Length: 159
Image 1: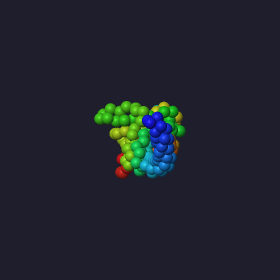
Image 2 (image 1 turned 30 degrees about the vertical axis):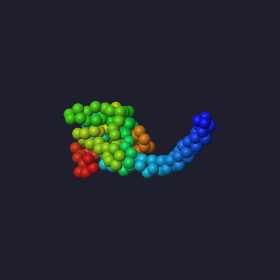
Image 3 (image 1 turned 120 degrees about the vertical axis):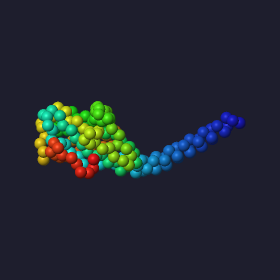
Image 4 (image 1 turned 90 degrees about the vertical axis):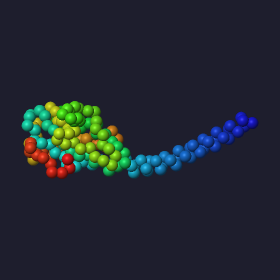
């Protein structure tokens, strides 16, 4: 008797599982897109470099979405290498990525986490802009035109 019921039970279970998959796929993809990371960049700037080989970059990455993301790498037309640095106390070190929290922001600022432009191809001057591409784990890359400010520039807001 158990063997006779096994077939219909398996077929019913499989039908319910497949029906559930079909309907949950469409609703989960809609909810996933509604809660996906929504990244934008503001307050970007580079102080005019004081050396011919290094520069720093600062910006704020806002995430208005319900999913966290991670800044994993940066490329630029002005430097051979751009590294993401994390600052803890008086120490800074290159890291493989920095989190962009859901419904939050990642602030890269002077004295804190920042970008380092290394092996400059040319020394940017105040008034110019530097192009960079921010790469993320989940979101599409964002291209930013970063203005070069005076070496002593201090932002009044955003950082």
